[in-house]
Length: 455
Image 1 (cartoon, helix red, strand yellow):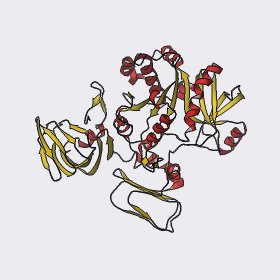
Image 2: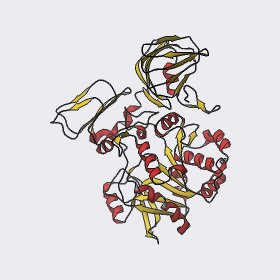
Image 3: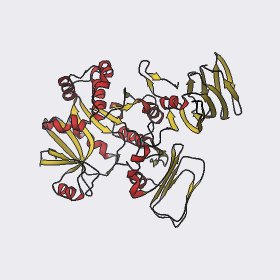
Image 4: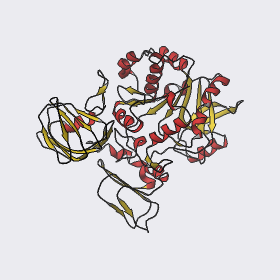
């Protein structure tokens, strides 16, 4: 059985910490078993390893998330990169074609597809293994994993059963997307399950479907054809049109941490970062990535989140509404992670004639290498912490705290960190923020970062 993890999303519901490059699954707000902070994707990958599924997993993602995935999970994590961000059907099709034509998987191989960010108990991943057994014993086209509801939610889709099958599998009658609370109560009485976005199918099933649609089934050909694919969900293109579907019930804990309200419910501490909550404050939290302090006093049911991208103050029950306003802010992202470390915008300005000034704080992880490909900007770099090697014009020099140098316009250069380094870079030129948005994205022809690299 092979696993495809879907890592997408534009990062609007957990703004300002999430952005186009750093979606919710990358936010380090959860604690692992050792008490260290980890992200949702790190938690899921750790659980996959426990279930002996990680070695069989690949991640389907957009180019803007590749660097962050490798930063958090390691450079060896296999990824399939969408040429452009689309919905779940194109992403799953691309991953399936990769397994079929590049890795040469057998057509009888079972493919399990799941989101990269479910908040679940470890035995959820043991239940995923049942997808293969369900397909074997039922001969169904698709096998889904459904969560036993704990309350009549209006936020989730429901899998409505026709009847119980041998082996505790459910034959699926229909689906109901985000019903009213009254309808949800009736569905639960019918033993309907929450649809958690987990699918299982044989590779042959999806390859045949692609051929019927005249969609290429060779990986390079599909990459070239990708912009012609409609941006539809896998549910719409495949699940709703399948003739035989089963569902496997999962009765353990499952939660979609998609809003600040649901996410903060799972945080073990009410304050992350520099902040203080007074004793009279009830059911509130602070998540602060800035160096300035935040104080909460005399309020309740409040979330305050601060990052270089912005500041959010919201009542918990209203936090799901912020997505509609985030599109008003166009400049970001102001914080990004890469395989070599991270960068954070400290100050940005733009003059009327298009001349820009951008000041960034750079963290370069020990042993990593950052390559800056000259783009015609003037740059001044200053080391404020750590020690490393600078390579400029094929000349090597040691750089430590206080080292400051101006980089000639258009020159390529690189830094290699002997220890963790922090640097301040001031850039002047045009299109600086546009270049930053592209930072870490993959050059389709070269299949390597256009702005940064690592070793």
